[in-house]
Image (cartoon, rainbow, N blue to C red; front, top):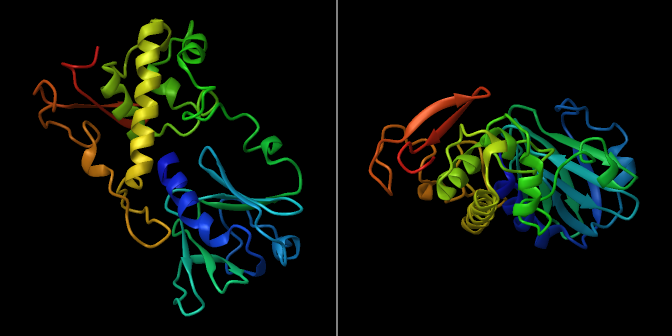
Amino acid sequence: MPELPEVETTRRGIEPHIRHQTINDVVVRNHALRWPIPKQLRKYIRKQQIQSVDRRGKYLLLGLETGTVIIHLGMSGSLRICTANTVVEKHDHVDFIFGNKKILRLRDPRRFGAVLWTAKDPAKHKLLSSLGPEPLEDSFNSHYLFEHSRKRSASIKSLIMNSHIVVGVGNIYACESLFLAGINPKRKAGSLSPARCEKLVSAIKQVLAQSITQGGTTLRDFIRENGEPGYFAQRLFVYGKTGEPCARCGKPIKQITQQQRSTFYCPGCQH
């Protein structure tokens, strides 16, 4: 699934092409995504100008004059900038056609993504209203994490992957952040000291910022807006490296399962 860095990379990639552009038309080839695409979507947004291209968690928000298009890439979706000459393929479900002759095309092979519309404040939409703070913003800090981890018996990895606590820290980035902070992913969240919370917050911000800079991980299904994969995966320290020597201490990386997800960590460095 495209995570926060992949979604932010996509946002930054498409923004220069579509911001301040007018939507001349919308083509929906398949309404049956995770949630049905509104049948009146074309009527709602046609001839409106894209005023902003924002992100909230893993959701992309296209701000128009009378509302917001909410896009989620699901498990395998991608957005690409193309032209009328670009061949339409099997899983290309939605085209936003702009006055500058460019097309924003949603491809979603597994159809777990979403294209929704709201005329109200998107922050109050049911999919966004309960989300925690953005990890790269100042509101997510060591004091916040310490306060929200008190008396919690859940693992620290589960806590930082909880979108009600903080948005966008997916499995890969949770593993890498905990490694960088030297914290065992199995440790109870409530046992973290203020100092360890500070290290973890710093690590999360560092890992996510670096990933965004590098263009997102090379997940099998993730393609950037120009059709090229990201390049951050080669810099991973623990994720997917079961049995390989730790880059710090040389001990083999271990793999366990937490909440039906694979967790990778170094038993020598992470306590």
